[in-house]
Structures are given as C-alpha cells and as structure tokens.
Image 1 (tube, rainbow, N blue to C red):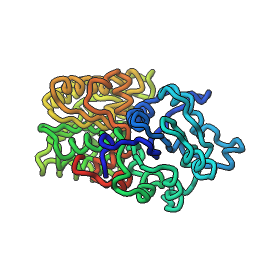
Image 2 (image 1 turned 135 degrees about the vertical axis):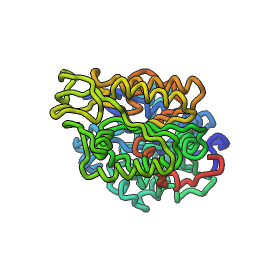
Image 3 (image 1 turned 45 degrees about the vertical axis):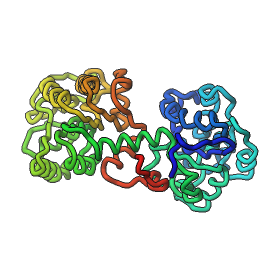
Image 4 (image 1 turned 180 degrees about the horizontal axis):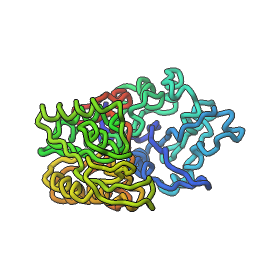
Length: 408
C-alpha cells in the first residue's frame, strides 16, 4: 500500500470509492453535503496531479435493480442528483454514467481525459454490490488504473466496491484517500496512543447497541460516562426505580457484569445521578428533576440532570483524550437538550485546553454540528457504524482489503 500524498496521479485514471450517501429533499436537492466535502481533498489531489477521477458510491438502500430504475422506479436513489452540486464544488463539469457495469460506463471511463471527473450510477442498483460479488468487483476494477478507498462510512461492509475490488490492484496501485487515512489514524490514536486520563462518553438508547464498544473501552479508558436511555438499564439492574424510562429487561445481568468488570479493571463508571423526567415523550410534556434511581411511576428520564451535568463536566475537563459516541438525552427536543449541549461544550472546552477529542456516531456528530462546535473538537468521524465497529476491536473489510501500513 502506498500513501496518497506520495503518489503522482499524472495520466492515471483513479477509481475512487467515496461515501456520498447524502440526504435529499423532495426537489432532489442536497440538504447536507458534509460527506461530499470530506472527500474533496482526495478528488482534487488526483485532478491537480493531472489525473482523471472516476467516482463510485452507494446512495440509500434501493430495492429495485437498474433496469426498473431507468423505467422510473426509485429515481430518488440515482446519483445523477449529485452531479450539479458536485460540479459546483469541483469547479468543473462532472460527467455522469447512467450505470456502473455496462459497456457505456466502460467506454466513458476509458476515454476520460486528465482533469475530468466521471460519476458512476449508484453501485447498489446491482445486487452483486452488497453480495461482494468477485466478478462484479473485477469489472469495476477495469474502469481505473489505480484504486482509492475514501469511504470510511462503508468500510465495515464487505461490498464489491469497498473490498473485493481492491484485490484487482497491486499494492502500489491501491491506497486510502485523505479522509480514510485521517479516520484510521485518528481512531488508532485513541485506541493505542491515547494520553491519560482517557474518558469515553457513551450514550444513546440501548445497552445492546453498545455492548462490544463498552467492553473494549474497559481495557483502555480511565473513565466511562454513560448517559442517554441506556443508563436506566444500569439503574434498574442495581435495584433502582426508573418509572417508565427506557429499559432492556434482558440486559440487566449484562449491566451488572459490565459494572463488575469496570471495578475489576479500575475503570470509573459514571452514571447520571439525576435526570430531567417527563410524563410523556413530548417536548410539551410536564417535566421535573429527580434522582435517576428514584423516578416515579408514569415518568420517564429524557435527559441528564444538573448534578449529573456538573459531575460529568468535571471528569471531561480533567481528560487528555476524549471519545464521544451517543447523546445524553433526547436532544432533538429543546426541553431535553441541555445535557447533550453542555457535554458538547465541555468536550470543546477540554479540547481548547489541549485534550484530543474524537466524535463519532450519527447523533453525536449531529449534536456537535447543531451546537456549532464542529470546529472546536479534534476530529469528527464520518462513519457511524464503521467507527463503532472499529472501536469494538473488529477488523473492517474495507480497511483490511488495502492493508494498513506502518504509517497509520
């Protein structure tokens, strides 16, 4: 594997796998281009060197095949909707191939000139993509001279365009893009080179979604802050009263086990001592503050309380490394957003004082962006599921296909 920075793309056609799975409105207009922006440095490097860029991506989860799409079915999943915006961002006309597996796509790729950009149709219009079909991957490989994987958000999927395609390129003709390189190096920094004390902030609705990451973090973190709906499973497991708060009854023993493992390893688990509770799952519900293990029947915890905010803040501000995955409450509702907002601000404050902070997971990233703190943390991961699996200790097929280098 070579590093993209040291490769000269002059006269090369670079087949670039990106993650342009962006949201569209009813007019097929992009409402958030964060993922496109993230891969621009990679595309521009190829063009600046004098190469040509052939871009492939998945887009949504279409159920139809390409032929039915051409007849009008699931038009919303066509990557042609990305062409105008991508052209504007790159400052040049982006060509479009209405598929990625036909003679037409092959001819367009073969005749592309230096400085030109070709966007292929959605790879998921082919069932061979998600099946990791080798022949389909080999066909995709014929479209380029070199292969760049810049789609960290899809690195945990063993799909044809993210994994099998790499096998058709020699080690000196396949590489990570700048985004993938940054994702891997920053994750590795947290996992294996973290400065202590290291605090992991884990939130969200369910313990079951975070079991593996919690178990892995117990081996490397000094402090683990647990918030969000998943906290109430821990409280109930310890005999607390949680009203009608979210709970996973079948994970009570697991919660006790995790607490025991943390104690054995000398890791401090921080649960929210108090909560903002409501009598209904609504921003207009009646609300009050109560101890998290003494929530009355008919009430549910929807955010961490002021004492929990203070306790969590003190831990965060003493940290040198911070990993944040998952919100502290239902931050989309203004009455239950203070916990997540304050934690976000404290992570930013700690970063300003020299801590390294990595934010990952869709809700955590959304919160950082919502509170306009995205430029005040060290790194924001673009891959929710991929980042989660990476921190669970799993090997991601999209990364393994290129092979990690000593540089990362």
